[in-house]
Length: 491
Length: 121
Image 1 (tube, rainbow over the protein chains, first blue to last red):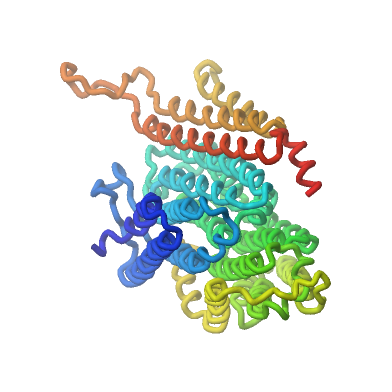
Image 2 (image 1 turned 30 degrees about the vertical axis):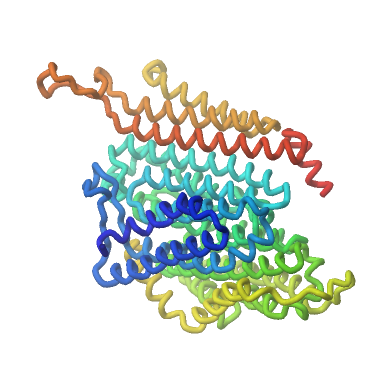
């Protein structure tokens, strides 16, 4: 049984999805989905344990050895990402029932869980697989279900946001497909491990550079790197709150995983950073992304949109840390993957509580909420502090590593700009705090009560995780250092 | 370089660029989807061209043909592209379903008119 874990991880949510339709009672379906996701979470804990003890796990699908069959390969990076995605999805699902009852129409409850599970299994598949074409297939499973999840939003702008995401996302996926096709053309294999052995011999070839370009641009469209980010704010703002929390915390992380896996393992550091000027490109795009997206976030009047822009700037931080091209930078990027998932998950869940009680996330509706919803607002404040990178929160740990990485590279201007980014973050977080605590409510919405326990529990679980891993980051730092070593980053 | 030798790839490039152009330039949502589909189709042709080996036959084993020196073209890209076609169809179906919902709630499928209505909101 335990040797089948890598595939069970993906299969359980995939099989549970159609079963939801048979159960068809909303509350039972919710419990069923929660159990399926929790089982995946437990499996991912066992997997990370196994990887730490006995190294990379290789699993051949249907006992067909690679390269004929598809191979699942779980090393530190995979196990770490599996843990993030399943953990966040299980915590977010805790709040799903209460939140979607308020935000979706009655006949869509069950379909929501079906799509959620499909999206989850798509993401887990992307992470677990060791086959390049399989990445594309799972990417499309995850993407198609997330387009539909976004379109479930009540506001009609959710529809246009979903269609825009679909057009951009399909464009990105097709670029990835072209990249994979060119790689196959050069090497005759789709297995990532074989690709990583055969591609370095071809590093002079122009076809490989084109394959790399198509692939990277495609992935960057998916992860909303700065100039390719325009689909994201509306998609996150008008999707149902649970969906925003789930996608903001996991979807972009999975896209970053694909980027990491291909830059470091498949193409190799040598090719990506020495032959191609990837370092300069990532540094430039990261910096521009941080500053622009944070500045735009300051001027947003819808808090969901504000945090969506903040996500774009935090992704740019991860890309910036990658662009440092030393092992501290890589550790910082990996830490921020985990930490950003915790922060954004908590913040968007807190917004779902606001949405539940107030019915809107416009900034003006936040006035006086500090008094009427103290727990929710306290969660937003701590999450916001974590975004800024105040000590004792997880945000501090990853920002600290980024600063060290930039100093190791003697990139003084970058250090200053990272700090400037934190100040900009401080400004937009302060706008929310100011409205919630220091303005009184004029519209007479005094009957607003604290959010129900089922929404507060998952929010505070994530907030406490924010604090715990900020005070005691031993686990995350150990695992990210091991991951960075396994990716072969230069010391 | 002989242009005719890489004729397939020229077709792929022309289709790909016209698809991308339609996707970017047209304001009508259905036309955008058509552009996207043309763009995806060009990739199918790319994969299938890549599988061909000059002088090779279809990868089907006949009983009455003996010997190892028969050259078969590579069947794997065809299989891959079958999967991609299925993905393409489901993407198009979802996109068209979204367009129907947009038409119902906005009364139009022209991008600039939708944008104007969103601004009023």
